[in-house]
Image (cartoon, rainbow, N blue to C red):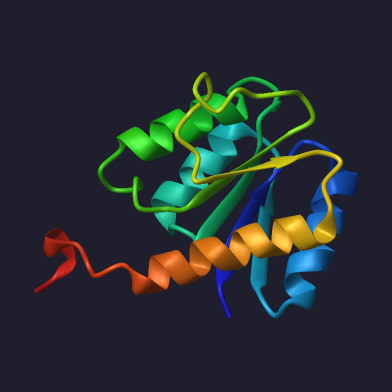
Length: 129
């Protein structure tokens, strides 16, 4: 069971993603804005972060940028969700992208792919005793 953090300002989207991912056996936590996402990720990094690109205040694109440039959190796999077209070259360095409205199987496949990749990665030298 993986710990997944879902950040979206739309309660219906949060409910749907929680239902889908908890139905796959994951422990799903939620937040509603970009600042909360950064606080939660820094306090207790999840196994996967699923974040909406269009958040009020600090948007998801900036959240991804900050997470991926912070040495303490850059290892966190991130899925960026967006209802708008994002050119991968123009966006932040998220690990996966999901277009809203999303297909349930696509979300699950992206989460599972990132979890497998994360488990297969050897520990970083800074995390060894």
